[in-house]
Image 1 (spheres, rainbow, N blue to C red):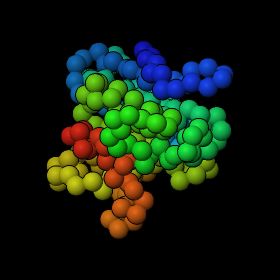
Image 2 (image 1 turned 60 degrees about the vertical axis):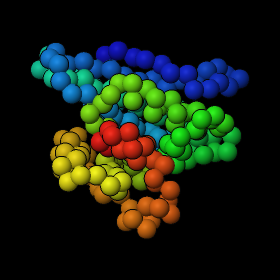
Image 3 (image 1 turned 90 degrees about the horizontal axis):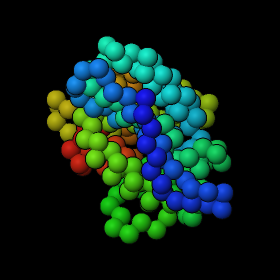
Image 4 (image 1 turned 90 degrees about the vertical axis):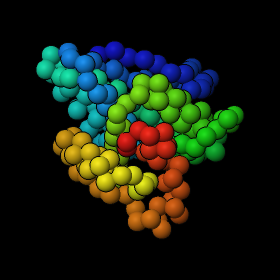
Length: 195
């Protein structure tokens, strides 16, 4: 397993980095991107992704394709056990994935760097792992952004493969009220990457 660090900010204690993990299968194939910890207090989503990555890393000889994982998308939120990014405006990172020509907050810098990094890796699919609280089970959420029936089917099949519960996102009215059109999944779909 290879690691890549992307600096998104700094504190008096040092740099704030996103750590992307790369697992390469023995044979060429598609690339899967996995993200957890967008909300710092959703620790079981992080544990679920790390467990899955450890399994995959032990199977590379029989694996086709590549996996890119970002287990700690909100590292300061994890340290503070806080849903939002603690610095600045305490932004909800998963409502910050919109175009930021000049990012101001740590959340905006983080979102911009996550999108840039993932787009460079050209995944065929992104799975964003969440929980409802620090004590709930991890789950995979299928986003409501419009997509073709074929993409929808593929999303459900891949999500089911993780072994985690799979749910459909909020109803459309609530989806807009929650600003989920600015979520990571919605941003990836806008860049033609199924999520």
